[in-house]
Image 1 (cartoon, helix red, strand yellow):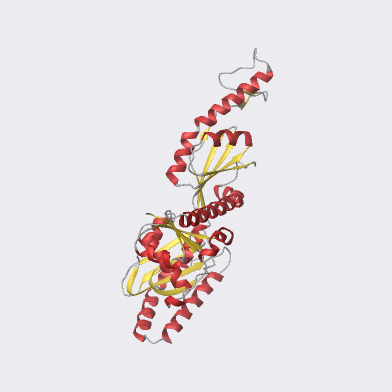
Image 2 (image 1 turned 60 degrees about the vertical axis):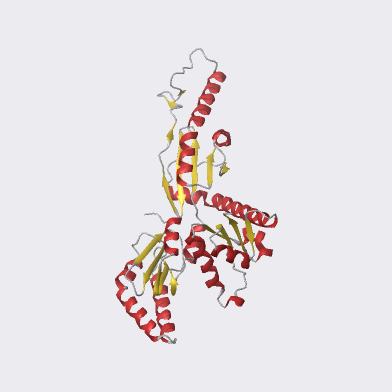
Length: 363
């Protein structure tokens, strides 16, 4: 099952009276380093708890970790399905959740009141849902790209031109006989334009169903422009003048287009941060600044939280670490059904004077 935003919302309320163990590891292909790193993190967590004042809590966590050994071994199996793995386990309760995704999540073992989400949130922001369409004379080949994975969807096939035994291009229902060569080529292009426009409902339907914020059209600019101009507005459409080898697998397609998708996401994030800031300054449904946003979060008014990945906010007056404050903001956003975007440095520049945090509000 593919990890998605619904999983984050469920994990945001995953808690326990003693605490929740959150274990993260990244297993690079061909190496056992991830196993060692997580084992070291778990050993350090045991030592920290044993040296602390709450010995009963340390004892309960130690027992729980012992019981979790089979699940931890499974998490660290090099043959497992994901590059990034996470395990969340209640200490007093019995519930355990694991997540697998094709994105690095670091290596960490921590005990908190609730599941620790920041590594997951940061990872999935880099690969939010997007669509890729290889546009050619043979049709439109579609790919759904999200969270490090790519799946090929049902294509739109054009029965436009085929090569006959003589190598001469033909078109169903259209013969070269009696048609000037230039006119024949024009008729082929007219048919291609019609097929591209006929493909619009299918492409737009997939984009809507799968929640693509960006649709990348790859191919001859003449062909991608016909399709792009006919698609409905509502998401960014990016044109990429390139030849996408039809033999590429979905994962190879994702690697080929990743730079273009990364640039599009950075533009979207910067525009979102600018919009939230401008709405806040004009008295609209936007907010900036740590104190105001914390109050709005606790009222359930935040629809979309924007955080600078560098976390420049000052949490000392609140008696918590910056990481704890960031986690609280993320949990509150998901608890009330909102969205979270962790902004990379470039996109976060719009929030530099606002303490690195902004929000779009419900009202």
